[in-house]
Image (cartoon, rainbow, N blue to C red; front, top):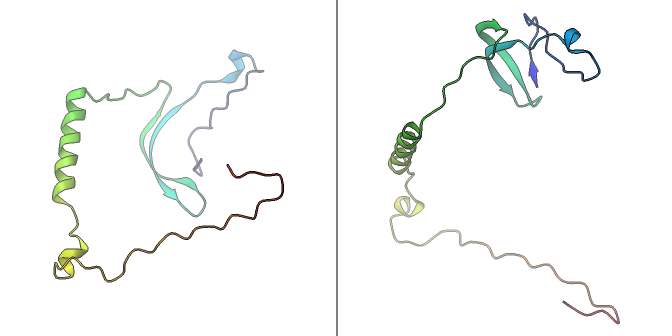
Length: 117
């Protein structure tokens, strides 16, 4: 959902019961929006292009472009790794807080005639 007061066009709503001539046409808008987490919706920020009757052309990334981006992200991921806790604790390898053991749930006692699977 998008919250947008004073929108220049009305939202298109498809109704299969209405004849095609009376439906109207969808209008495409290009805009900036920001997410409002408290309401779980998007809020309008700015209109980046005037409304259009035809769908805007989009850029489809080629396989070569995707491969380049993937290599760059892998390279940046390795460079931007955070140092481990061992580096900050002096490198002796001991942890101050050992991992906790999982708590097992007790099974209810079997009733006569039942078998444990």
